[in-house]
Length: 404
Image 1: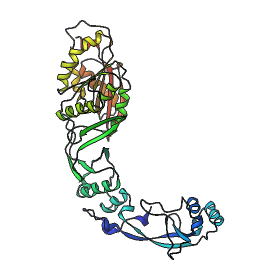
Image 2: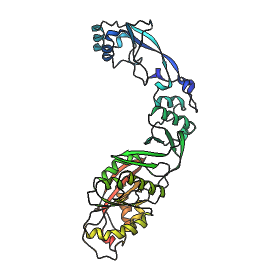
Image 3: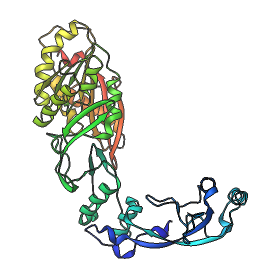
Image 4: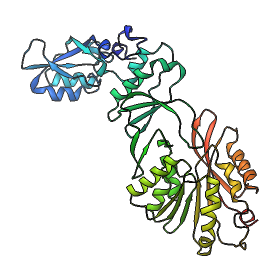
């Protein structure tokens, strides 16, 4: 498919981008059209004209005649006058344009090629080509495979060239550190500016992408949970990151207490609260998750229950959050048990099990020390890798746990 647009074979194996090496001349069919009907002809032939990034569909006549122009046609669709559809042929006759094809020598450059076409031409034949990336503001974040690493700087430069607004390309070099939820990355191309500004669900966030955790693929999940929060509710965000749950909840009129162990996340969480003018509605802490549950959350919960406030506890640290559920055991053992609605917990986790919903509820039950079967719901968030799902277990804290 599209063989004529393939870059020259000598670019195969290139590791340092040489844009000029992609330049070649190809021959394409063209129609000689009077300038008076030019726009009508181009409109009638829109499915047959050449369609490439940066390539003109209309060029000057080779005979330098002002009364005529050449309309360039797609060589893969038009090989002879018989290639035109009945409607196209009829239109050409009505405009008095002869169905005589001319040959036109067209210069094809690097700028007329798509990302995938450049990379397929450069990387070893038969190997996977990836042009996929997560976009975080001006940063493109890639996850290259082993065989692509020798070409990583070239790949990074091509991503910048072909994606307006991308000025920095990075590659993930290890798995996420569950303690601070960030990962080491290397610069592939562009400016080394890791402070990104992004907009998600109408809220602006700023952060150093190399020092905190941010995943653009979670915007739908952030919105789903925030929509369950009402004005006047209380939200405790145990692993708040830079604020994608806490800040939208505060904007809705909830009282928010947000925490993150990573000092960088804590700094940007405070910055984003100010940026979105909710600093008066969000109190922030820089504690371990367990210390946060058994400190600020424990201290504030009795008064909230007394006021019959709806309380939400968000625990978005999927690699470890289930292990923190034991912090709720006996949290209010010094208080008299009450029948008020206890906090709703949203606990995120990963599962590689064949039956992930059942498996995560079992693990949550073990950590909590109380069976959650029939008392919880599981929401599928996303598939993060082959046979690895991210899920959210939602349940009301059992009074048997909290007051034991």
